Image (cartoon, rainbow, N blue to C red):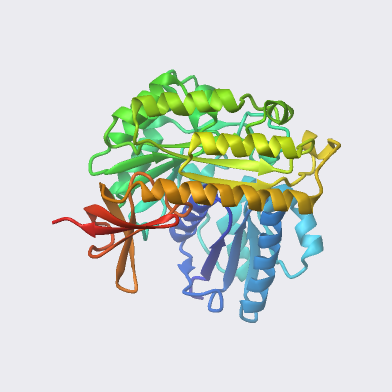
Amino acid sequence: MPAPSVWLTTLGCAKNQVDSDKVGGLLDAAGFAAAHSPEEADLVLVNTCAFIEEARRESVNTILELDEARRPGARLVVLGCMAQRYGHEITDAIPEVDAVVGIDHYAELSEILATMTGWQQVRLQQSPMDILHEVRRSTPTTPYAYLKVAEGCDKTCTFCAIPSFRGRQRSRPVDQIAAEAGRLVADGVRELVLVAQDLAAYGRDIDDRGGITNLVRTISATPGLWRVRLLYLYPSEIRPELIEEIAGNPTVASYFDLSLQHAEPRLLRTMARPGSTERFLALIEHIRAIDSDAAFRSSFIIGFPGETDRDVDTLEAFLEAARLDWAGFFPYSPEEGTPAALLPDRPDPSEANERTRHLQQVQERITAERQADMVGRTVSVLVDQVEEGIPVGRSFREAPDIDGMITLDTGAQGDIVDALIIGAYGPDLEGAVRE
């Protein structure tokens, strides 16, 4: 029989996308074929997210939509965080699902899928420990790629369930990461985005004294690489040497994605996170003193147990003072098994949603103002894609998938061009390429 065809839908964060890329590489190496659509596939896979309730709802809805879309006889398989965290509960609650394969069982995935379809294949001998780190992914379809440098997290944030299903931090060796970076660049990638649950703590679990700074320096030296970007930096882990490396290394985007979560010290203590408005502003001011062009992103939890209107005012005042370029706001989601889920005085969800909308509006205005300040400046832009004849790209200030975009008057995918910014429209910019 011919090799079974596979369709894989990915939900959630960039780290999940990396896992999907590696799963695709694993199945490609095992001989499976890639389907052009879920309707044509023999195996329909969903890499799910389970970070918060909204993500779980999206995962369930997507599973049901793909169940409706698949052809008769095709098998539906759930992967990822929800599969790892809820396992048998998914099977019981969604009988349409044919198999649930958690992260810990990816080493067996090709054999499981072959058995489901009756396909006779040679079983690949793979180590079950962090198997995806060893797998070569398929050639990227964009000029940027996410590069996961560690799995798991050692932090004990009271709102977060990730350590319970992703495990403790496990950093990859520098040489292994550098080899993957080299392969990606050889395949046409111009920008590498380093990701992990706790990126700034990279290397601590493997006694790598150089830590994240040494890793960034090593990856930035990859021949042919144009830019390195860092996502998910825990603020108390950011050391002066890392700031200096990001600000001073021309290959590293001066882009600081600070995981702040709030600005009120009392709430941060309850979250088991250090920090305050004063400490966060001092960090941002210190970075700007070294590099005045540095771009900043953060994310915030709204409606955490004990939050009051005054706490929201504190956060709003912080936003006005910090002048972040980008920020996301998320209503608190009580996660089963986390200490915060047992806390009293949780604001009503409708109130949390209203607070979230208000803070989003505040930040949208700030973002628009920050973008308007770029008009008249010339920036180097990586063209990510061409949409209906219009090149669309990003400078060092915009991370892929989450920030604004720059539309251009000329350019092809993968080009790096210098563009004069001639317009700003909310989060997005318009640039004219300079010859």
